[in-house]
Amino acid sequence: MELSKIAAALATVMDPKTGQDIITANMVLHLKVEPPNVSFTLQLPKLDPEYKQQLNFACQEAVLNVYPDAQVHVHMQNPVAAPGAGQAGGPQKANPLPHVKNVIAVASGKGGVGKSTVAINLALGLQELGAAVGLLDADVYGPSAPTMLGLQGQKPKVESIYGKPKIKPLYAFGLPVMSTGFVVDPEQAIVLRGPRLAGIIKQFIEETIWPPLDYLIVDLPPGTGDVQLTLVQVVSVTGAVLVTTPQEVALADAVKAMNMFFLENVSVPVLGVVENMAYFTPAELPENKYYIFGKGGGKTLAKKSNSMLLGQIPLVQSIREGGDSGEPAILNKADELTREAWLTVARNVARQTALRNEMMGPTPMVTVKS
Image (cartoon, rainbow, N blue to C red; front, side, top):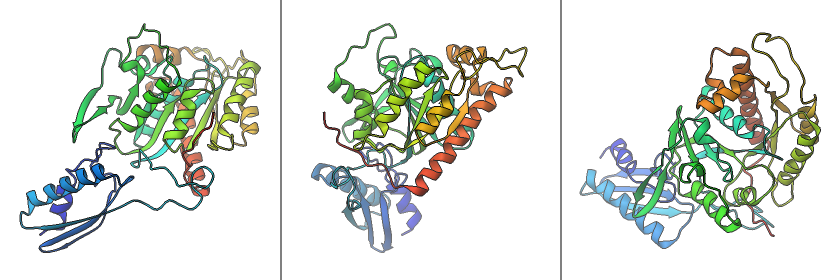
């Protein structure tokens, strides 16, 4: 019996909760081969009987397909939660995305500040730096990802894993992407109450086959509403990136978004601030800067949030054109100044995320009381 063949066989077993194979998802521990015995521990987020039975049978079948005479012993365990994890010292909820290292929420206090533009270019920037990145367009009222990534009209496929339907994300420029815009007509008005919104966000997180990722970038709707509250309930959010423009009215609303993350029963760290449309630079005069919307709003918000200014994005025509054409600005290597501004944001987000993870444990998923 060869250990490598058994590991390869177990890699064909899919976790019905995440859609990932159990080897990639690091669910298999202490694999031992002492012919004819094969033993290992399967680390599960939950120990409900149906889930355990499905995986037990699937593991047995996978190993016996390679070694028909093997005696397969599967021990199942649930990771012990850290003391005091969760709200009011309660047990920590099971992580629905154990194969995603960091969930980064991109938020703003008001619409029109370019939050979706920041989320998409940030995701592509992190990918260019060598990370595995996914994008969840959670702006259910105005989903922009299909247009900005050239995915209009495409529909995600559904795959059955042990009889349970799972959604396969669409891909653009190497990014796995999910959005309400893939399942709703572009001209349809989206009118949903809180429970329906919560159900959509939970489905996008728990029932989508996200690959192993270093970062899942979540583009939130503007403001502080049901989607934001659902997100912190169903997944551990590593940190938030706040988007604002320099002007006072945008800054005032951004402070409200910041304060939501600082609520005692939410406690999501703010990684930093992106100041979008920081200044206007004409293409023919790249050295000139005109502060149309004022100056210093990003630094002020960064100071209030005790974080840092991650970057200043200029107001240039190429960014608008890239969003409308489905070719995000960071991919335009001919516009080096704008491209470098986006890469600066990506580098700073990566650095701030690493520092946050060195200093703090995972953010507990919480129960938000109305």
